[in-house]
Amino acid sequence: MSTLLEVDNLRTYFFTLRGVVRAVDGVSLKLNKGETLGIVGESGCGKSTLAWSLLKLVPPPGKIVSGSIKIDGLDVTRMSEAEVRRKIRWRKISMIFQGAMNALNPVYKVGDQIIEPLVYHAGLEREEALAKAEELIEAVGLPPEILERYPHELSGGQKQRIVIAMAIAMEPDIVIADEPTTALDVVVQAQILNLMKKLHREKGISIIIITHDLGVVTELAEKIAVMYAGKIVEYGSADDIFEKPLHPYTQSLIRAVPRLKGDIHKLEYIPGTPPDLRRPPRGCRFHPRCPKRFEPCDKEEPPFQEVEKGHWVACWLHARR
Image 1 (cartoon, helix red, strand yellow):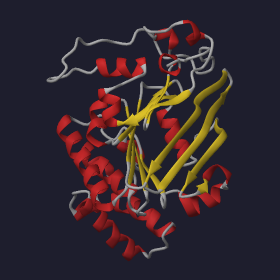
Image 2 (spheres, one colour; image 1 turned 60 degrees about the vertical axis):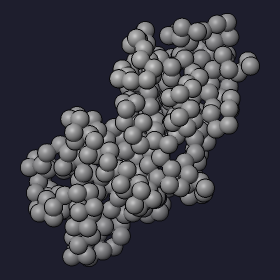
Image 3 (cartoon, one colour; image 1 turned 120 degrees about the vertical axis):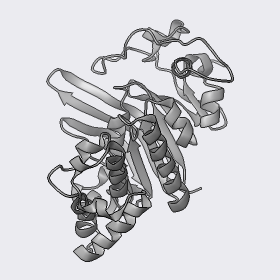
């Protein structure tokens, strides 16, 4: 399979008056053509910052400090803003933003917002762009008359579908979905997930889904990256992560989710709170909350190693074997 996205040792920091926040601190990952990758972790672990970095849209005072982001062989970090807008953003990689209502302009009709990238980036005439917008609306399961409505006239599920239509308007190779089911009821969540699976299947789009909901990840992702405090601590296939989790953090996340069948266990929680990324703990960043910590955990950072084929983990429990 051809590699569409390759991230190598990416570091994105926020330079605030109270110190440097290491939101993404040495992340490396790959995404192949037609693949779906889930990125999971607690709030504040750096998932959304990683997504913004991939589009080179990190809001100030954030900045990509080092590392590389190669999309279809092109290093985004070395390109100017004009080059990224012309060659990369929305054409090769796009994003379904968290909170559909916040992503839509309340004073413009839905149709005007969908055709904007088609007019300015694809160079289509307004009539051509409107025809394309109707196709996009039908592709996400909405009637054409939606184009004449304002965002406040739509339900949460409809707004989410509009944002998905905007993300696929330029037919990108990769779509990032940042918490696509947030604030939606379970019925609409299922509809949105089914729509994304349909787009993945029919259009061959590679999807990166960012969420803290493990149930959402099981529906979509073939591979999963578990993030904690700005770092990826475990990476592997969905089967490996859920059936054979290696990192204590991954194990704790899974035990915090209730099960209706199979290995029914007592629900647990992770004690403590995520670390302050201005002053992350020395050694393994999870060690202050880890029930399995031992001597090197608070002194040295564990290497990110392949324990089994395609299954990587950063933990001294497995690095010593």
